[in-house]
Length: 562
Image (cartoon, rainbow, N blue to C red; front, side):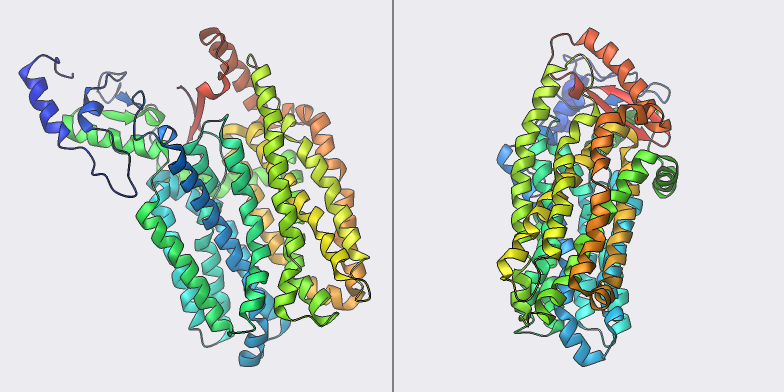
């Protein structure tokens, strides 16, 4: 029991506990006095069978969603740049081909493995780093993995044979995939995306998440641009060194300024401290019924994504579509040096500039998604009494699905050396536009459809996507040389053309597919029950939907009213 506020025992305890307040640091600028935490009234009895449920205080300074908007924007920009930095490192390697050939004389296929193995490493993110971040927090996992990425980049620069380079590239991708890991308990997105979900409410996070979602696509585009000009002045070792410096600076900024934002982890630390100081039993509100057990958490993270790929048609079909598009993106990384370098005789720097059309498309798509998010907010406000169907997320994907084959066919038949380059490079604008629209819409659709299981759905998506992104560059060079630069682009263009109906079909008939899905149908029933009870207690509240927080611990579901 907490002592009476007028007793000497209470006053002595308050004085003692006020000295236990955390120190204010650059990475922890918002601090709640421990005496306030101690004096808060918590539900429960403080026993093993009925522990105190630790929740945020009203206007709690340590609650990430109450932080200053400018600081939240800084964190959003930082985690977005770290995600871009990883994909940037994946594609800049292509600018090292010429000097690597001179030093080690590898085949083209072996050189391409430098990109493919790095991208294969991305598959590790949702399987390992997501679970570790849930157990130990986002900040420490980011620091460890990004420092490791820097070390592997630097070690690659000192390598003495091509096989060492390839091995180190794989580990760089595996550790660097941390910002791309797919887990967040409330509304599941990417680990860096999870940070954004930690910072912003459901209503306000759309713009920030759209900005974040575009950055990993800018990375593979900017890599050849920067690397193309760098390779004309320095050799491959210095390019690797520049990558190490770049990621090292980001790691250092993260060490100094990146705050821990994961609410279940922060509340767990608070509960553990209260238990140590008082001798009573406190637990985070997310762990009152089920404490996080790392062994079971890791088991689920390693096994359930494969179950979703095999047994959930919604996940498997949409993941296959996204994997195809992602593979085409990395196909372009290997194809542009052929189309513009070999066929037109451009320098490496000029070849890199051919990616600018795609970058413009990505930027236009971000603006489009921000405007479309307003449409979704209006739908949410107009449907307070029940959940907005996940299918309302898909209209941008329908637009993007049309833009992709248009872009590919346009590029395929305008990349003749005799035609002006601006025509073919302009063809890449709708590709950059379409890929962002499709990815943002489908990821949101999977999140809304699977909710507490969305981490597994997105992990399955990420694994398949990474495998396609790794595989496509391996056959790109031979395909372009054997069947020509026109038909080589037509092959994926026809595949994208066949996929045009897919987003529309899910928009039209997705509700029937979800009702027949084991996991998605469970979420339909859960949401119906949750909304019935929440609407009764929160009549007239326009944020009923965001008043329910879902958390998954092992295989159990907990609904926590905020």
